[in-house]
Length: 334
Length: 299
Image 1 (cartoon, each protein chain N blue to C red):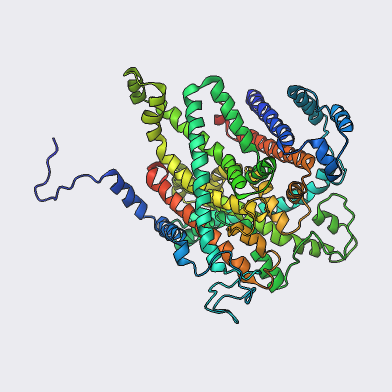
Image 2 (image 1 turned 90 degrees about the vertical axis):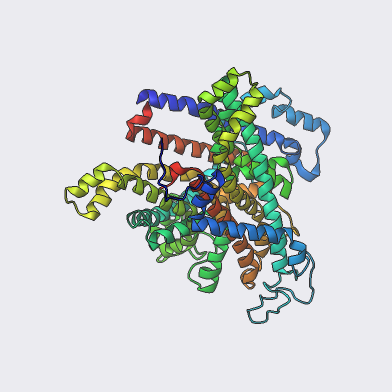
């Protein structure tokens, strides 16, 4: 097991260096000198520019600059936003809980709905329910998310007036950001109705962000269950006279869950990528919205730091999934 | 020796295409997908003939006209008009052309480069292989839309062309990995060794001996890649990082509907449906292809 972990770590390190190389290149490849961009339209005297470039180390050879950047990243310094003058790390930690909250709710929605549906479809294989569900699953995977989100707003917020259009909580409530998770913070606040307000703000974005994971989970559960249901031990269990429910839920599901859990773990990238669209549509103050804004404002340090953090996060979760998988399934440890 | 019952009709075995078609046609979804694809291609090629109006002509007398069946709609604008008085149906028809071009360009670009990189990695092995595959790992770590946004930012100014380039790079690792894996498994076969012993050069081995045998999974990936290219491109355009107005691109039309959709639902509904139906058609077709080309996966 230790050897397995070490091998995985040795794979993840070059990937991480590659990611930093890409984010390092990002700030140098974007049009315009980083110092000049900071001064914008006002312009800057050539001597002062040279001085500042020297201070920032921009007159050093590229490899030296890259090593400096690595050192900076390793010490947790991700630069400073050109627009707000805040450290990128501070902004990220303020916005990240909102994205986590949304993503957790989205994936919970996807699992709660997708898992049972996938199981039923596998058990009733070839039935109209199965065909219908698989049709819906392809449709979900083909969904243009911006449209889906806006249609939900059009129907449920504008048409029926059930949910608010944007934000995390009604303006009437002031919630002290304690954990950063609105559901928890509003739960502990004294305001009545704050929790309800937070839930009503969360529900549509969570459904929209969870749609593609839902399609994936349902499909994956169905095919994993189908595979397991064909195994000999299922026939043995049935032959022993065990009830249908027990065979499906205990014997089959437990073994079908391994690939499903892996797929769920790998949804983190999908969720963080999807957050860009969902957060933009619902004005959800999270990391995805922040990244899009940073491109529109040409706030490249934010884009650079934010992208590095998002990629590191995906890498870390994939690493965790890998380890769990290796832990659960000794065969792949080799 | 096989004896044939004298009464039986002896048919030649079905050709490869016939066998493929029989298996493909069993899948009703795949046929629906194929029909929609053909219709789309016809409409897109004949846009000038089919579209009732020009996609950018502004009818100043009818801003935000509702579709024909809604109250106040006219037969002149079947799906209504947008905030600038442009006919939505015509914009959708020209948009179909654009979407198909986007899909084709993105798939061609990433397929060509991915095949080249994948074959090189498989044939060269060693350091080249490791370097290329680690590079693909790095690209895969980024969520696809995040990477696309970064590439558009690097390229400087948002445009349809830059977005297409970005989406091509995002989908590149999938092709590279696929080709490498397929080529590696072919390389271990006897016929490759035989061809090599017969004196074939590396290039010939790569392109004429090995590549044709890796085509089946590539076709499937390319079809599914087509749909994700259209989706990603629309998403970028929606964020203002792809095609710019007044281009009749479906994602740009969605972005344009942002301010008006609450009172003009048709501005939002139809472009989105167009994207959904197109992507769905390619996905259904791709799934059908996969089942027909790869009997191993079929149940």
